[in-house]
Image (cartoon, rainbow, N blue to C red; front, side):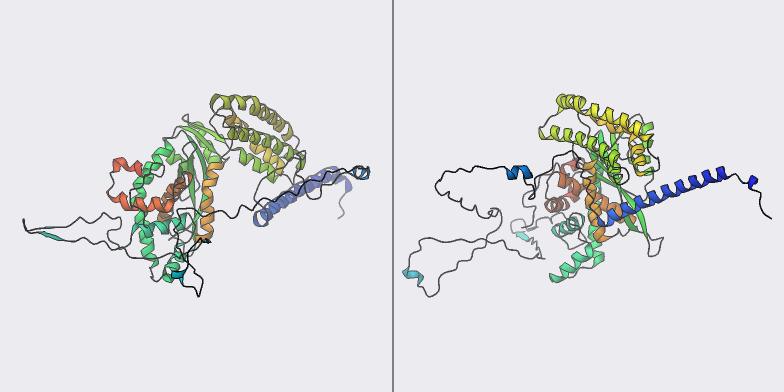
Length: 500
């Protein structure tokens, strides 16, 4: 039966099809954006450097005068001068004096040295290398008989961390630092020990590392107390794959929640099995002060806590607009250029060591007007773009957090971004590419102990091997009420604590 044309509303059908086409176009645009981001993640550069369109470009080899300038007649005049002597080459940098020197004297052949006089010498230094060495430390405690009293005397055995093992702290310290600082998995270290002439089982090395973490646990707890008492924390999180005994041949995605003091540069890693609010809620339950984080919704729960002031990271906001450049270049470039001005102000403050009230005044006069104007611009721009577009999402992200993004400029001590803690997280990202996963949830928590203390060593420019070796040598008998003396920022090595 043929349908009557009067029963069909062609206008409604047309608008319905137009709406459907628009939805499909938006979906396609969103998928193309996601594909571009994935391609950039896999193949492209990760930097977010932005150069404004009106920024002066650096000169290149191809910068030449304009054509009219080349055609103008030029009168050349010169005055002959004496030949300019070329300065002598300064030569290669000399090697540090603390490096051991091994001298080799090379005499001319066919010469009787007893009949000649040495009038000088030429010295050539080259940088040499001796492979790592496994050696045995033998501690001998003689027994003495006192004939007068008929008593036997012998020195007490030195205190050791590894009482039931024949390993020295120097070897364990090297193993820990090579894994958690130099990102060398334990199995590769074991293969190297075999090449050096002694095979160590993987279970034995694992036990050494576990025992070290147990000894360092009180130090980690003291470290945690200092971090949580700082009053200003950067916070971020990163994943770690963990072998799960409940899942055969599968890994669990765990998380390191990382907190860093802004002033003291102390870094705290806290392992949790998930990314839920339970992690930060638990560790920050007694914290009071500022908490700087990205826009992850878990941190917003602290808005209801009167003791914690949450504010956000400008670098995360900038990243959203950097990703939106292919979608809406004019608008994204405008925001990036304004944010670039804010960072230029911060560099000026740092380079000129401007602090205190002078820093607050400078931010008030320079940064706050830019932030206020940009906030108004974002409000106007948001109604002009599609909310589901990349630029729409970038504007919505920043606009909903603008007060928290601008808070830093109302103080003289808050930072514009969360980059300090992100820099502390990078070793974990490099490490997991090498060792791939933690063997268990307990192993992941032990790793959090090492990452926390060794990251603080880095921030205080403390040699991590020297520190770890000395701590493992002393901590077994160290008074618990003085444990903070062993933290990297307070550490003073004991004489002869470092293996020659």
